[in-house]
Length: 546
Image (cartoon, rainbow, N blue to C red; front, side):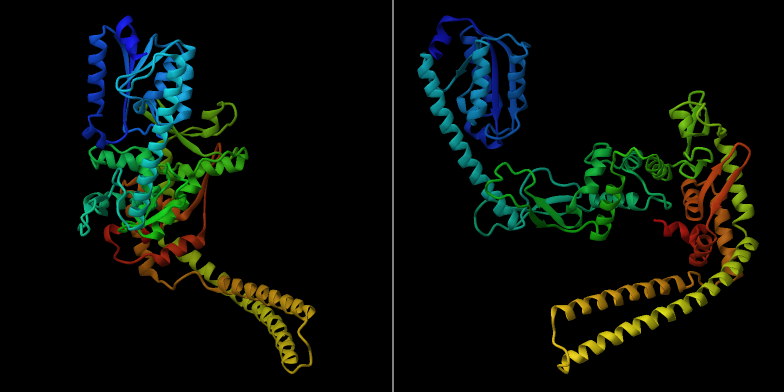
């Protein structure tokens, strides 16, 4: 068939070339070598090259071959009109019999022949079919042996803690290890300090933000790009940040084996110890946060509102996530007028659905933000108010502690009674007054469960009885109020929002008024935890929210 193609016909051909590894360059099988040889053959015989398809670094056994699939798709969908597909040799075409037969079936249905520059495919159709079946089976078996050898070598290298190749994870560098055996040069991963600092910054922004407000992956990418902190000279994207946060290598565990081709040889994931950049606790906290933010299908309105609230609290806008419509319960979100010239807080449902669904007013951004911060500064973050609620709550909690003490005494009495029954039961068994039986075992189990239940109730009372306030005086209150005023007047939106989140529960907006609700106990706890002499006058509660 090859001689017939060469001598008798002027054909329209598609060339397919492929290499699986860079090592094939040494065997004159590079893409350029294959293309030059096939182009020379086509020109010498007067054939017209319609299109060239290529796959670089793709296995013909189990690899993903986009060029190969595009060739078959173009033929099937009549996007290309050709008489022949030319390859350097049949092993370049396929080393998987299923794919070879699938392709040749498409060729036959479209009256297209396969030409191999190196292989002498017989001209007789039956002989050609047999020849290709035999060489195809040989090529597949050769590929399977090669892949087995490579897979076993990679598994062995991973088990010994060596770097198995591929893209070096960001934050690390591959470093050669001393070669004492004379074999292949091996490498391990070591921390690349400059990039490791960026990895730490990503986790820090995700878990803490800068002023107590955590950053999402999109905002982290924007932050890094704005500061010209790039990833290998390329801008960060949401996906690249997400991959950093999800990669367990940063807590010291590189996972090898997720993308194995030969899973029949070894299907377990091999953990390769790697230098730690992020602590295990922080990595797991990031994973927990990522899972909580993962999109979920939920038609429950309250759940949807809660999800929107969580997103709002992460928004850089001061009151997003705190402002709520008193009528429908929706968040008030940022809305813009005159091409972004004016900013307003507006009920989300009025934006998403219709202005008729709710009568909640629209508020100019600066006006409502100033009104709320001034109200808080005047009525909440002042010494006289904090002193008054401190005295009231301390009296209430002291009385509650006395009541809890009485309840605890009652529970302790019950616990002691059950414990005496258990002790008597064990004593009777030891003195052989009773024999151990299934009924006695059941009684002991019931007693054990009762003791555990009573102990749990006692522990709960102890926790509730602990006064959640430290003793503090006028000086500490004045320091806290002063620090809060500096935050509210300082113009730093993130710090101000962190302060509001730490003390305000929500802000409900009516047609004619605005209600700000918060917890007095929460406010006092923040006063108690505030440290005097804090730098820049920032309340400690902001660092607490990191």
